Length: 314
Image (cartoon, rainbow, N blue to C red):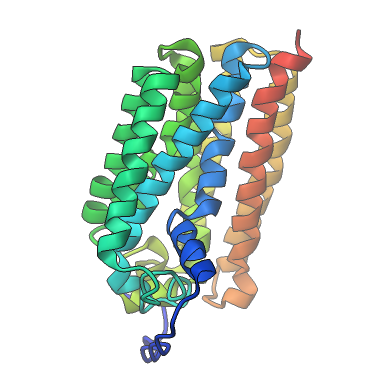
């Protein structure tokens, strides 16, 4: 059963116009999904601060950020190439470079491979082999696991596919320490449980888009009330896991206080969205983008707290 209205008629394709050099550059940058990269780096650099118990080496941070940016950008480019058929039909994505034919699929593939190779070389040479390996695994999982296998086949697509977005916590840690431990694993799980509420809120807003292209996001096949309930479940798991970092990593008091306050605010927002979704499918009533924006703010401030804790608790 589908909980959206009838698919709207496919939008007419915009007329192909000659692109300027500026348009082409912007198109290539857009293929890397800069906003996604920002979130990924936000969970990388603060972990480096915590792993260093202070300010990490600037050169190491730069190499990790550049390598991580190229790696995430590469994965996004491959995602755009594979999904170009559905991106042409979705309101949210039809202005991307491939649907507008500013960049050809072949050129985009070459661009994606170049970014991927550069990221691996940078991380291997200027960071360490373990970080490079984790970056390659994250890239491969996003492209083959999420984009090609899960996205169009299951409502759990972003639950398990979101694992790729958790790897930056591991990479940030290994960049400084050269090894893994339970601390980055806990942060990995925080991002893992954060991803469904974040993505489902956005998918609820654009559920007709996803329905039109037969992508079985949970808000497409389930009622808004059920989506809200699942958001609340994952939000509680996320907050509980965030507090687990206190005993596991032996943080100072600043982090658990910040995590508790931020978690309480986010849980309140999640429960409010669930309450608004009971008995209605109206997006104007449910207001899912409130939770989406709250999730971005939550993750940002939580990882800022991770970075600040060793500085404040010295």
